[in-house]
Length: 329
Image (cartoon, rainbow, N blue to C red):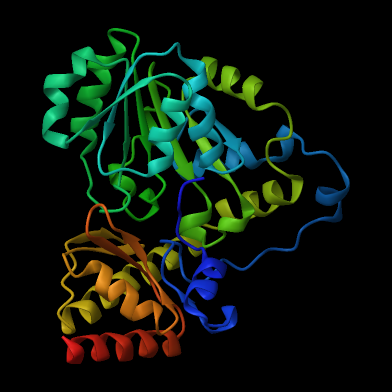
Protein backbone atom coordinates (compact mmCIF):
# COMPACT_ATOMS: atom_id res chain seq x y z
CA UNK A 1 0.00 0.00 0.00
CA UNK A 2 1.29 3.44 -0.92
CA UNK A 3 1.58 6.25 1.61
CA UNK A 4 -1.13 8.93 1.59
CA UNK A 5 -2.07 11.99 3.58
CA UNK A 6 -4.46 11.81 6.51
CA UNK A 7 -2.75 9.02 8.43
CA UNK A 8 -3.27 10.60 11.81
CA UNK A 9 -3.19 7.36 13.78
CA UNK A 10 0.24 6.51 12.41
CA UNK A 11 1.52 10.01 13.24
CA UNK A 12 0.05 9.82 16.74
CA UNK A 13 1.92 6.59 17.39
CA UNK A 14 5.15 7.83 15.84
CA UNK A 15 5.29 11.06 17.84
CA UNK A 16 3.58 9.83 20.99
CA UNK A 17 0.84 12.47 20.89
CA UNK A 18 -2.83 11.49 21.44
CA UNK A 19 -4.93 11.36 18.28
CA UNK A 20 -7.44 13.98 19.40
CA UNK A 21 -4.70 16.62 19.78
CA UNK A 22 -3.68 16.61 16.10
CA UNK A 23 -4.36 19.23 13.45
CA UNK A 24 -4.44 17.50 10.05
CA UNK A 25 -3.20 19.66 7.16
CA UNK A 26 -1.96 16.71 5.12
CA UNK A 27 -4.86 15.86 2.83
CA UNK A 28 -5.75 18.79 0.56
CA UNK A 29 -9.43 18.52 1.49
CA UNK A 30 -11.81 21.41 2.11
CA UNK A 31 -11.22 21.99 5.84
CA UNK A 32 -14.90 22.24 6.79
CA UNK A 33 -17.09 19.28 5.74
CA UNK A 34 -20.22 20.17 3.80
CA UNK A 35 -23.33 19.88 5.99
CA UNK A 36 -24.94 16.49 5.39
CA UNK A 37 -28.54 16.76 4.14
CA UNK A 38 -31.19 14.53 5.62
CA UNK A 39 -30.86 11.07 4.09
CA UNK A 40 -34.14 9.29 3.27
CA UNK A 41 -34.57 5.97 5.04
CA UNK A 42 -35.14 4.34 1.65
CA UNK A 43 -31.51 5.11 0.72
CA UNK A 44 -30.44 2.80 3.53
CA UNK A 45 -33.13 0.18 3.06
CA UNK A 46 -33.01 -0.37 -0.72
CA UNK A 47 -30.31 -1.35 -3.18
CA UNK A 48 -28.98 1.71 -5.06
CA UNK A 49 -30.70 2.54 -8.35
CA UNK A 50 -29.30 4.56 -11.24
CA UNK A 51 -32.55 6.44 -11.85
CA UNK A 52 -32.35 8.49 -8.63
CA UNK A 53 -31.16 11.73 -10.24
CA UNK A 54 -27.49 11.56 -9.24
CA UNK A 55 -26.16 11.23 -12.77
CA UNK A 56 -28.30 14.15 -13.98
CA UNK A 57 -27.12 16.35 -11.11
CA UNK A 58 -23.49 15.42 -11.77
CA UNK A 59 -23.79 16.07 -15.52
CA UNK A 60 -25.11 19.54 -14.75
CA UNK A 61 -22.44 20.27 -12.14
CA UNK A 62 -19.52 19.08 -14.27
CA UNK A 63 -20.91 20.17 -17.63
CA UNK A 64 -20.44 16.68 -19.06
CA UNK A 65 -22.54 14.65 -21.48
CA UNK A 66 -21.71 11.20 -20.10
CA UNK A 67 -20.39 10.04 -16.74
CA UNK A 68 -20.29 7.13 -14.33
CA UNK A 69 -20.35 7.39 -10.51
CA UNK A 70 -17.67 5.25 -8.87
CA UNK A 71 -16.52 4.52 -5.32
CA UNK A 72 -14.02 7.36 -5.32
CA UNK A 73 -11.83 8.23 -8.29
CA UNK A 74 -9.38 5.71 -6.79
CA UNK A 75 -11.68 2.92 -8.01
CA UNK A 76 -11.37 4.19 -11.58
CA UNK A 77 -7.60 4.68 -11.28
CA UNK A 78 -7.25 1.00 -10.39
CA UNK A 79 -9.71 -0.29 -12.99
CA UNK A 80 -8.94 1.71 -16.14
CA UNK A 81 -5.59 0.04 -16.94
CA UNK A 82 -7.39 -3.30 -17.24
CA UNK A 83 -9.44 -1.93 -20.16
CA UNK A 84 -6.38 -1.72 -22.44
CA UNK A 85 -3.90 -4.32 -23.60
CA UNK A 86 -0.46 -3.76 -22.08
CA UNK A 87 1.24 -0.86 -23.80
CA UNK A 88 3.43 2.19 -23.33
CA UNK A 89 1.93 4.76 -20.95
CA UNK A 90 3.35 8.22 -20.38
CA UNK A 91 2.99 9.67 -16.88
CA UNK A 92 3.51 13.37 -16.19
CA UNK A 93 5.60 13.71 -13.06
CA UNK A 94 5.43 14.43 -10.24
CA UNK A 95 2.11 12.63 -9.97
CA UNK A 96 -0.33 11.03 -7.55
CA UNK A 97 1.49 7.74 -7.01
CA UNK A 98 -1.53 5.43 -7.39
CA UNK A 99 -1.62 6.07 -11.15
CA UNK A 100 1.82 4.61 -11.81
CA UNK A 101 1.21 1.62 -9.56
CA UNK A 102 -2.13 0.81 -11.22
CA UNK A 103 -0.75 0.85 -14.76
CA UNK A 104 2.35 -1.16 -13.86
CA UNK A 105 0.21 -3.73 -12.06
CA UNK A 106 -1.63 -4.44 -15.33
CA UNK A 107 1.61 -4.99 -17.24
CA UNK A 108 1.92 -1.61 -18.93
CA UNK A 109 5.30 0.05 -19.45
CA UNK A 110 5.17 3.38 -17.61
CA UNK A 111 7.32 6.22 -18.94
CA UNK A 112 7.78 9.16 -16.53
CA UNK A 113 7.77 12.46 -18.42
CA UNK A 114 8.23 16.14 -17.68
CA UNK A 115 5.77 18.55 -19.26
CA UNK A 116 8.33 19.68 -21.84
CA UNK A 117 9.03 16.09 -22.91
CA UNK A 118 5.48 15.18 -23.92
CA UNK A 119 5.45 16.55 -27.47
CA UNK A 120 8.47 14.47 -28.48
CA UNK A 121 7.28 11.30 -26.73
CA UNK A 122 3.58 11.44 -27.57
CA UNK A 123 3.60 9.50 -30.84
CA UNK A 124 5.28 6.55 -29.10
CA UNK A 125 2.63 6.33 -26.37
CA UNK A 126 -0.60 4.33 -26.14
CA UNK A 127 -1.86 6.52 -23.30
CA UNK A 128 -0.86 9.63 -21.40
CA UNK A 129 -1.86 10.07 -17.74
CA UNK A 130 -1.68 13.32 -15.81
CA UNK A 131 -3.16 15.17 -12.85
CA UNK A 132 -4.47 18.71 -13.46
CA UNK A 133 -4.13 20.70 -11.23
CA UNK A 134 -1.10 18.64 -10.39
CA UNK A 135 -0.91 16.74 -7.13
CA UNK A 136 1.23 17.69 -5.23
CA UNK A 137 2.46 20.86 -6.98
CA UNK A 138 -0.80 22.49 -8.12
CA UNK A 139 0.58 23.19 -11.60
CA UNK A 140 -2.16 23.83 -14.19
CA UNK A 141 -2.01 22.92 -17.87
CA UNK A 142 -4.32 24.73 -20.29
CA UNK A 143 -7.20 22.97 -22.05
CA UNK A 144 -5.64 23.98 -25.39
CA UNK A 145 -2.45 22.08 -24.60
CA UNK A 146 -4.29 19.02 -23.34
CA UNK A 147 -6.74 18.84 -26.23
CA UNK A 148 -3.88 19.06 -28.72
CA UNK A 149 -2.31 16.04 -27.01
CA UNK A 150 -5.67 14.27 -26.94
CA UNK A 151 -6.15 14.73 -30.69
CA UNK A 152 -2.76 13.21 -31.48
CA UNK A 153 -3.39 10.23 -29.22
CA UNK A 154 -6.92 9.65 -30.53
CA UNK A 155 -5.66 9.39 -34.11
CA UNK A 156 -3.96 6.12 -33.10
CA UNK A 157 -6.62 4.88 -30.68
CA UNK A 158 -4.73 6.19 -27.68
CA UNK A 159 -6.07 7.61 -24.42
CA UNK A 160 -5.56 10.84 -22.55
CA UNK A 161 -6.44 10.29 -18.87
CA UNK A 162 -6.79 13.52 -16.90
CA UNK A 163 -7.26 13.31 -13.14
CA UNK A 164 -9.06 16.54 -12.16
CA UNK A 165 -9.44 15.74 -8.47
CA UNK A 166 -8.61 19.35 -7.47
CA UNK A 167 -10.31 21.12 -10.41
CA UNK A 168 -13.48 22.45 -8.71
CA UNK A 169 -11.92 25.84 -7.93
CA UNK A 170 -10.65 26.37 -11.50
CA UNK A 171 -13.48 25.02 -13.71
CA UNK A 172 -12.34 27.03 -16.75
CA UNK A 173 -9.39 24.62 -17.03
CA UNK A 174 -11.52 21.48 -16.94
CA UNK A 175 -11.92 19.13 -19.90
CA UNK A 176 -15.31 17.93 -18.63
CA UNK A 177 -17.19 19.40 -21.58
CA UNK A 178 -15.00 17.45 -24.04
CA UNK A 179 -14.96 14.10 -22.24
CA UNK A 180 -17.37 12.48 -24.71
CA UNK A 181 -14.64 12.59 -27.36
CA UNK A 182 -12.94 9.29 -28.24
CA UNK A 183 -9.93 8.51 -26.07
CA UNK A 184 -10.49 11.24 -23.48
CA UNK A 185 -11.13 10.16 -19.88
CA UNK A 186 -11.61 12.70 -17.10
CA UNK A 187 -11.68 11.74 -13.42
CA UNK A 188 -13.41 13.93 -10.86
CA UNK A 189 -13.35 13.62 -7.07
CA UNK A 190 -16.39 14.54 -4.98
CA UNK A 191 -14.79 14.41 -1.53
CA UNK A 192 -12.08 17.08 -1.86
CA UNK A 193 -14.04 20.22 -2.75
CA UNK A 194 -16.95 19.29 -0.48
CA UNK A 195 -14.73 18.10 2.37
CA UNK A 196 -16.39 14.66 2.45
CA UNK A 197 -13.61 12.20 1.63
CA UNK A 198 -15.29 9.49 3.70
CA UNK A 199 -18.22 9.30 1.28
CA UNK A 200 -15.90 7.56 -1.23
CA UNK A 201 -17.43 9.00 -4.39
CA UNK A 202 -15.99 10.07 -7.71
CA UNK A 203 -17.04 10.32 -11.34
CA UNK A 204 -15.55 9.09 -14.60
CA UNK A 205 -16.34 11.32 -17.57
CA UNK A 206 -15.79 9.54 -20.89
CA UNK A 207 -17.56 8.25 -24.03
CA UNK A 208 -20.55 6.02 -23.37
CA UNK A 209 -18.95 2.89 -24.83
CA UNK A 210 -15.95 3.12 -22.50
CA UNK A 211 -18.16 3.85 -19.50
CA UNK A 212 -20.19 0.72 -20.25
CA UNK A 213 -17.01 -1.37 -20.22
CA UNK A 214 -15.87 0.22 -16.98
CA UNK A 215 -19.25 -0.29 -15.33
CA UNK A 216 -19.21 -3.96 -16.30
CA UNK A 217 -15.76 -4.36 -14.77
CA UNK A 218 -16.71 -2.61 -11.51
CA UNK A 219 -19.99 -4.46 -11.15
CA UNK A 220 -23.36 -3.34 -9.78
CA UNK A 221 -23.97 -1.02 -6.83
CA UNK A 222 -20.50 0.54 -6.92
CA UNK A 223 -21.77 3.56 -4.94
CA UNK A 224 -23.94 3.17 -1.85
CA UNK A 225 -27.50 4.48 -1.66
CA UNK A 226 -26.76 7.00 1.12
CA UNK A 227 -23.72 8.33 -0.78
CA UNK A 228 -25.83 8.76 -3.91
CA UNK A 229 -28.58 10.58 -2.02
CA UNK A 230 -26.19 12.97 -0.26
CA UNK A 231 -24.21 13.72 -3.41
CA UNK A 232 -27.29 14.42 -5.52
CA UNK A 233 -28.56 17.03 -3.08
CA UNK A 234 -25.17 18.69 -2.68
CA UNK A 235 -24.46 18.81 -6.42
CA UNK A 236 -27.72 20.67 -6.99
CA UNK A 237 -26.91 23.35 -4.37
CA UNK A 238 -25.56 26.01 -6.73
CA UNK A 239 -25.58 28.86 -4.22
CA UNK A 240 -23.65 26.65 -1.80
CA UNK A 241 -21.04 25.94 -4.47
CA UNK A 242 -20.38 29.65 -4.96
CA UNK A 243 -20.04 30.18 -1.21
CA UNK A 244 -17.66 27.23 -0.92
CA UNK A 245 -15.42 28.54 -3.71
CA UNK A 246 -15.26 31.95 -2.08
CA UNK A 247 -14.36 30.49 1.32
CA UNK A 248 -11.68 28.22 -0.10
CA UNK A 249 -10.13 30.95 -2.23
CA UNK A 250 -9.95 33.23 0.80
CA UNK A 251 -8.45 30.42 2.87
CA UNK A 252 -5.86 29.67 0.22
CA UNK A 253 -4.77 33.31 0.03
CA UNK A 254 -4.61 33.51 3.81
CA UNK A 255 -2.50 30.36 4.05
CA UNK A 256 -0.06 31.58 1.40
CA UNK A 257 0.33 34.91 3.19
CA UNK A 258 0.84 33.21 6.57
CA UNK A 259 3.53 30.91 5.24
CA UNK A 260 5.35 33.76 3.52
CA UNK A 261 5.31 35.79 6.72
CA UNK A 262 7.51 33.15 8.33
CA UNK A 263 9.85 32.58 5.39
CA UNK A 264 8.05 29.57 3.91
CA UNK A 265 7.35 30.97 0.46
CA UNK A 266 5.00 28.66 -1.48
CA UNK A 267 6.42 27.45 -4.77
CA UNK A 268 2.92 26.85 -6.14
CA UNK A 269 -0.38 25.29 -5.13
CA UNK A 270 -4.11 25.40 -5.80
CA UNK A 271 -7.17 26.53 -3.89
CA UNK A 272 -6.99 23.55 -1.53
CA UNK A 273 -3.30 23.50 -0.64
CA UNK A 274 0.05 25.26 -0.85
CA UNK A 275 3.19 23.55 -2.13
CA UNK A 276 6.67 24.36 -0.81
CA UNK A 277 9.72 22.96 -2.58
CA UNK A 278 12.79 23.42 -0.39
CA UNK A 279 15.66 21.46 1.17
CA UNK A 280 14.22 22.36 4.56
CA UNK A 281 10.90 20.59 3.87
CA UNK A 282 11.64 17.54 6.02
CA UNK A 283 12.90 19.64 8.94
CA UNK A 284 9.76 21.80 8.93
CA UNK A 285 7.54 18.72 8.59
CA UNK A 286 9.14 17.21 11.70
CA UNK A 287 8.99 20.51 13.61
CA UNK A 288 5.26 20.77 12.97
CA UNK A 289 4.62 17.09 13.70
CA UNK A 290 6.32 17.43 17.08
CA UNK A 291 3.60 20.01 17.78
CA UNK A 292 0.84 17.69 16.53
CA UNK A 293 0.40 19.44 13.16
CA UNK A 294 0.48 16.96 10.28
CA UNK A 295 1.57 18.10 6.82
CA UNK A 296 2.26 15.95 3.74
CA UNK A 297 5.96 15.40 3.15
CA UNK A 298 7.26 14.26 -0.24
CA UNK A 299 10.84 13.33 0.65
CA UNK A 300 11.88 12.33 -2.87
CA UNK A 301 11.00 15.84 -4.06
CA UNK A 302 12.07 17.77 -0.93
CA UNK A 303 8.54 19.16 -0.95
CA UNK A 304 5.87 19.88 1.64
CA UNK A 305 2.13 20.26 1.01
CA UNK A 306 0.02 22.33 3.41
CA UNK A 307 -3.75 21.93 3.52
CA UNK A 308 -6.08 24.64 4.83
CA UNK A 309 -6.81 25.11 8.54
CA UNK A 310 -10.44 25.55 9.51
CA UNK A 311 -11.16 27.15 12.90
CA UNK A 312 -9.43 30.33 14.07
CA UNK A 313 -7.75 28.31 16.81
CA UNK A 314 -6.17 26.12 14.13
CA UNK A 315 -4.85 29.13 12.24
CA UNK A 316 -3.38 30.52 15.44
CA UNK A 317 -1.81 27.18 16.27
CA UNK A 318 -0.15 26.92 12.87
CA UNK A 319 1.15 30.48 13.13
CA UNK A 320 2.61 29.82 16.57
CA UNK A 321 4.40 26.71 15.27
CA UNK A 322 5.76 28.58 12.24
CA UNK A 323 6.94 31.40 14.48
CA UNK A 324 8.84 28.89 16.59
CA UNK A 325 10.41 27.36 13.49
CA UNK A 326 11.53 30.74 12.19
CA UNK A 327 13.06 31.65 15.56
CA UNK A 328 14.88 28.32 15.67
CA UNK A 329 16.21 28.84 12.17
